[in-house]
Image (cartoon, rainbow, N blue to C red; front, side):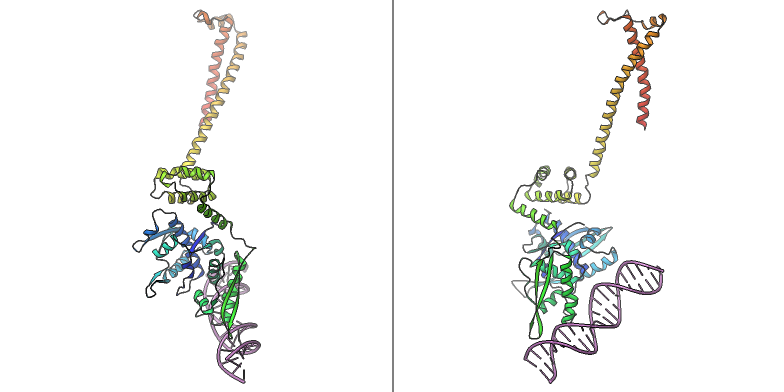
Length: 422
DNA sequence: AGTCACCGTGGCGATGTTCG
DNA sequence: CGAACATCGCCACGGTGACT
């Protein structure tokens, strides 16, 4: 399965939707976000300053990618459609930090369209802006998330990762209920523990790279606060992908050296694409794809002259190398040339053999020739230039040899043609 | 296609516990 | 002491998947 890291803006983790979001909706949404983030981040067309109300931001993803990345075990389009429909209904509220009387409401997902196996969706400009320029984000490993089946596990996992390096602040039961949308259900604390807290902590500890536990604190006789504890889970290591990604990002920051392969490919890019960030993109592509294919894809992309070179190149690599057909044609050409070369050599060797054989046969035949026949072969003997003049015997043998060679060649040329037809 | 066991989710009555 | 809350055990319901 493809591994993906979503740099989820903290605003999106902390948001408190009015309706409850199911686990499939949460996971699908994360996949939509990560896909949009990749498309936005690597796009030169969408600049941070350009993102505004006036524009519509469309992204796309294949059904298979969505299902794989989100870890959805259903392959039913209708079901996914219903879930997406519910997701679209979810409205979030953003309050202006400077003036608390000002607010705005928008849908998490603006629209989704399915065409064949591809979903095209659009996100509110605020979300796109947050994805493009997230200063405060949480690095979520979607592979870890995809394993979780309980919606509360997903919420708590995101929260835990957000505060991993510090500590989830102690929160009141009310806050916890708001976050998990359990204000109207599990009225009893025991039920909340049984169905939400225990279950989620258990699932997270069992399946992900962190251990989550909690303590409760009473105020009077009532449980008033929840205090979470996060530990690393040595049994389930953070995916190597996260580490690699962090390394790559560190590399960009430090502007360290890239491998020769990356540098070579970088030089193949069009001049105006030779910017530092593209080295890291190439380095990432090289982790997943063959050097030769990327090289050919760059060549191919250059020919195609797409509007956005890097995103064209990336989709070419990810969608199975547009250049593959070109590369394969080239391979066939090379193979054919090799075959022809081989035949040539074979033929030359055969010619040598024919010459030797003809010489041998000619000598044999000469020994059996009668005087009449010898006279026939001696036609033209007197016409020879004095410098090349040989003995009568050699002259006759050479003549017979030439005759034999022609015959043998004729026989073999039939053989050659037959082989070619095969 | 129908049956059935199993699981997850949400809930409730009875009972135990705690603290003002 | 008793109200308020926590806990236990159990039930109903719907979805799912194996089996016939």
